[in-house]
Length: 355
Image: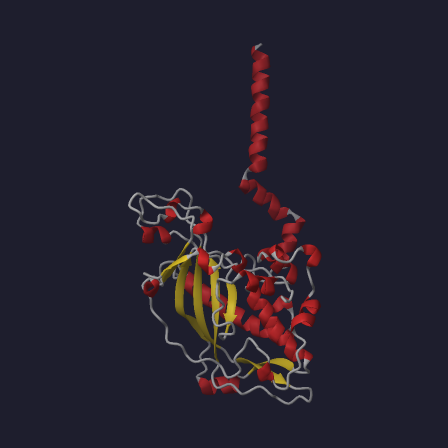
């Protein structure tokens, strides 16, 4: 009898160990490292874990496009352009192009009290600036090459509008060229690189615009806007015993937060547009500064964070995700608003014209 009990106990222990090692995330990661699929994913990335390459299928999955465009109704880029990029234009000013040929003004940085709350964390600040510099050049290059592989990770509406503007020029006989104008850049000042000129924390919204409700679903609290925090209060937020909103007791969807960075960048690279005869028809640059807006959907604080923390101390527990999303360039979309109406979402993400 004792021997049988010992055997059964040993069998259960072995089964439990096997179950643990099969479900342990660390062991799953080790197994994933050696899989051919994982190796292929790593090999296809220019910078591992920094961003994922954009193509139409990934944007449909990552940006929630399947909510408005079922797979059976999905369309190709050519079909999309045949709907929205068929206008005849007589000069490039008639096309809404996501690039200011004359350049942007040198914005004076707006300092806010909460600027360093999450974004500036030691050496990460310089790394983020390098990432933004590279991605702005990649975006300019993608407009010239018309290759999705050159695109940085971008917000869906911005991506569609940008590609539509570039395609409209091409279909009217224009060509977009990326040129390195070192001579003109040296006259301008010759100092490459960029820096943020405004940082804002937006609580209650998602960088994926399709996941946000309409304006009527939120109460906007701007008490801390000058310090760098805007809160969109939904109907699901919990109240504490004193009648104040308690974000720590609220479900994750209602306490999500976006870190929004307005960035300026000086570069010798410029875009030129030529007509069918090769004549340059775009205006010459007056400034080599360009601006962009990047967003990061912050990682929520740990589940078991202390509940007795002050609200602002609790916000500091948010962490930056690996992937930054490009949402605007040279004020192309006037900053790219975060909330759309239902009709606007159908027009933007379904690829169909409303009557």
